[in-house]
Image 1 (tube, protein in one colour):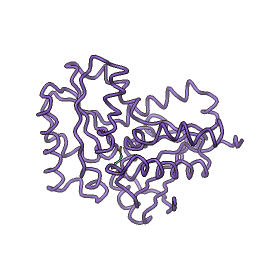
Image 2 (cartoon, rainbow, N blue to C red):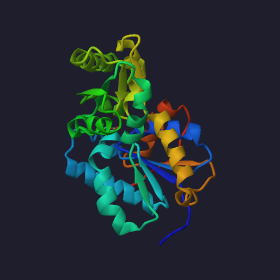
Image 3 (cartoon, rainbow, N blue to C red):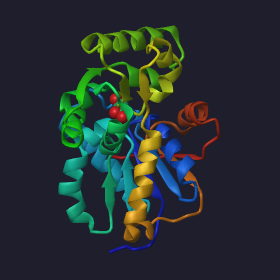
Length: 276
Ligand code: DGL
């Protein structure tokens, strides 16, 4: 068993997980991180369970190969469709010193404190909505909360194409928010259940009525990771603390560098990797 400490891995289909990485680095800047974006195969949102599982498995194995002991699936679609299978099928073969965590539960856990009306909306990819993961988790933690979800098929693709601030993006953002609020007008809290969506925030805030809270996940995932590392000293010891961040993409390095700079407001050191 390899017990050489390494960075924390963060994986997403593309740029969305950068919003999770950002939240985590704000709270836990002392750790080392490797971010992996499967930009060449994004978006994952409309892909089948089997394909999302296979792609996520390849990404997690790549991050393990790069020395990570702890990997966060900074992607709701992968958390909804692949996390359980990875934990049950992949980890037992790899060794007990590796962990993979998702981001749906940390978001759901805090919901009870955020909603007054107990009516919550979820905007997410088709895959996440179809999996019913949010409704099932909310039913476990807060059975009194009613959840309504709407799939936003084009939103992640708009972000990947770097069109987040275009009039076209605004049209599709309004369309889905209106659809959600028509479904349940008592909603007072909207979870952005796809890590790409905070990158559309300029447009989202224009169309969400005052008094309705918009919940991006970065901060809550970061708080949950912090508490996990405090409770699991054996894993914390396997995470190096040098304050660095490396980036891997399955697409071109130049394309990733350019887009990531827009989202993160800093230049990034990125390397191309192949996953298959
Ligand atoms: N960012 C991802 C999520 O949180 C996936 C978006 C996509 O690839 O469709 O669901």
